[in-house]
Length: 570
Image (cartoon, rainbow, N blue to C red; front, side, top):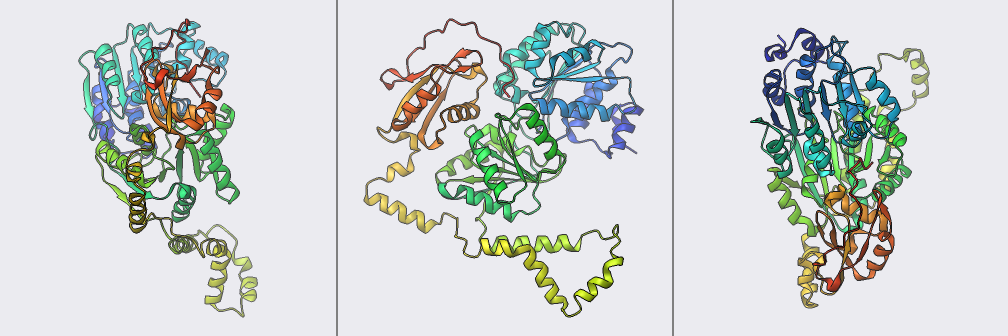
């Protein structure tokens, strides 16, 4: 018996789910579906990405829809175009035997005229990103009055991206909704505020612990020196043959540079970042989804909402500055009950971040040695042997060539043939790793360095974070903040991309609601001001200058402009 039947779903939905190969609901589906089928209960579901949340709200929605009424009865709001399309694709599969129900994606980067035209034909479910949805409302292309059910998917992601005002606006204007369903991986105070302000006695379900990472993820980290970071990345990729993964970088420049370097060396990779056009991003994502690309090099902003099963590895080229971003990065793997690996490449001074992450996600991180050249060659060799043994030879007309093959290899032993096959495949690996250096930061090296620095009376400089170096930094003011849709990681990415500076020149960043204070190495402060001051961001002029006296207490002047609503920044 299919266990979905016991949840109260109708026959058509159970058949569709069964066709997809699912017989047992995930924990979030098991707990949420019976509650949501009532259609009148506000609901908060806390579960990590990849736990089946789309089916948890999608199946009940499809059962509650009145097929005869062709107007928006349900609204699903999600953070990104990619997730919007993914939800629509899933709904298409779930409604396989309920073909009269229609769902329409509404997102930025596509023709708004075509989307308006589709809505006018009449749809039952609208799946939308916040920015484009507000555009539709302002154009009076969508009427929210008759919407009964509102779903906020990945609510924490939307708030991190600065969509709080847009979400409030949508909830204030769906005045006749019968229930609101909020799904989130974490429960920060802003998500809790939405629950408090717009929901009535919501039933809350938590799968796993709040603000924790997926228990099926193996968290690993490797310590290396800053100048060896790329070589370490390359070695870890080589040590994991057959991986299908995402490498996360802080900046667009890093994503592009790493993709170009790996691509030149023959790796099957592509970059995904904000400088690509929407068409280019769609092409990259489609190739990655089809597994024509083995590894995606992505920034956090560009990778928001990627929902693809089968990703085996996530690699943090650098740890994110905002530790909550780690949860979202790692959540790209170990989806739908599968296991996955999240690897972080760290500098020796970042061990304190690892301790913070362990506490936050309530999981142990495993410190591993960076593989040696011999380890890599051995791993690649046995992977190739297993692949060779498991190759399907049933579909080819190989028998026709066997006599020729036997004749060609008549004077060679089996051992010699195997050696030649191995040489053909592995000569480049053996040559590259023949004299490979040890990339690990050894304790004896650190002890020698610490002792030398003690003699030079500089030990404090090593122990303290770099932004505390006496006299080396100046504080800059900038009139951008969380109100502009920034969170710490995306703000850091923005200022580094615009100034083309390395992160090493930055110290402490104090991101506030209306502005921010940035500590910058004095030698780089002028370049950063020149790169950012006077530029336009979201329709208003950016101002950056040195803080008065470096106190950080200067009150910025009002720029006299009416604030422009937050839009999609992709």
